[in-house]
Length: 294
Image (cartoon, rainbow, N blue to C red; front, side, top):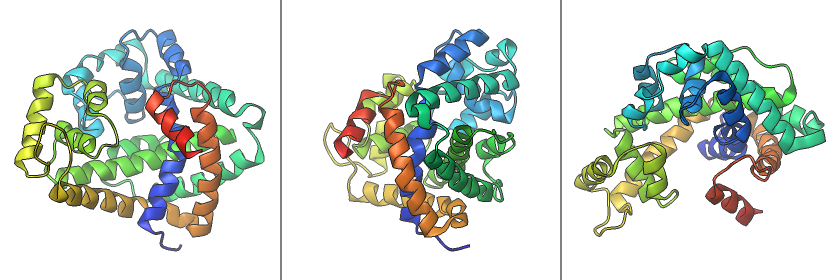
């Protein structure tokens, strides 16, 4: 095994992330969860991502997902488990993945590049499985059987790599003393994602959001003024979390080395672009950023 630069781990992860992330937007997911009997618009998301851990209490999902308003989670869990079992939900999710990626990649869905990317990503993900400790959401996903078809293997591998990285990131946010809404405020203050989008998607009301802003400001992390911008202290603290996330996230990619990482990134960026362009419901801002890079 060879060490991997943290920056390499970040680039490879980001290059492949749309391959996994589309499941949270695709209309095929909405259809699959509706067919199970889900009616709340967020039930499919919370139930499907929690299901690898079993029919867990809402508090487990609140703990592992970290930055969502607990009231939103309680609105759908544990009710979801009375409508469908975790096994049924996971089957529906994988069916939605299959339909989505077939739409995105068409006749190339089982082509040589998908197969090569799947093999590389699986090797990295299987190495991640050597370190499940302290990573509960990853651990749940690691307990699932591997699919057979290459495009589903690639999706599952990226899911494992995502949750491995995500569990580490949550732990590091805790070391900075940030709660869920405060972490979102810091994210918004980087300028990467509009504050309104983060507040709405995680269901924090205006008073809760304002309290989070006030708390981050009291830490001395924000510039003066009504807009959210990190000052030098805030940028340094944010960068420390992000860098250490990259450090912890580099372990799986040691299985494929720098050469394998370079090849996986090359293929994944093309495949991810096709996923984003396949009208699978990605937010307009994400699609626009992709087109600017093209």
